[in-house]
Image 1 (cartoon, helix red, strand yellow):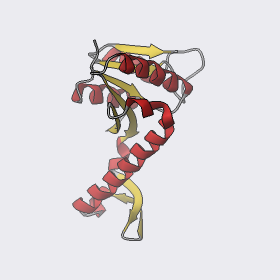
Image 2 (cartoon, rainbow, N blue to C red):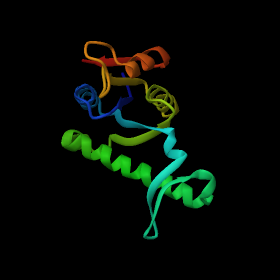
Image 3 (tube, helix red, strand yellow):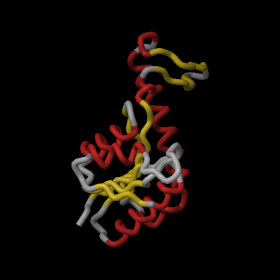
Image 4 (spheres, rainbow, N blue to C red):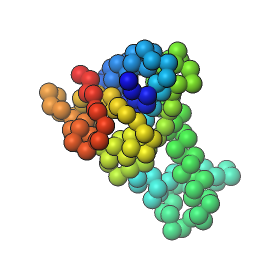
Length: 159
């Protein structure tokens, strides 16, 4: 039924359980792809810490860097975040082979990033934890609440 399932991932126990549920759905249908996505604050596009040519560039504001140099730095940071996300998922996704896309979305807020990523990539289901790393105990997390109210696709929350 679902061809593109997105799992927003922050490393929390709820996100790990959501990933397991989504993985089971992907394994049931050979035509389904899982999108494992982390959302990073758009502040990364305003200042970046990284290295370039052996020289440390820490928190360089966009207006002080050359356009290509800055783009290179942002791309480098996003690649590092993708690698970290893959490492966080560990062996969980190994048996899905090439039916997994690991990506990082840049947005002002996590909920906005999740909804925009799902829309942009044609995801037809979002499977996410009810609470993330910063949520209050016993309450629906603010990010999952925001996604439930903003997304135009079905959203499954996992406890």
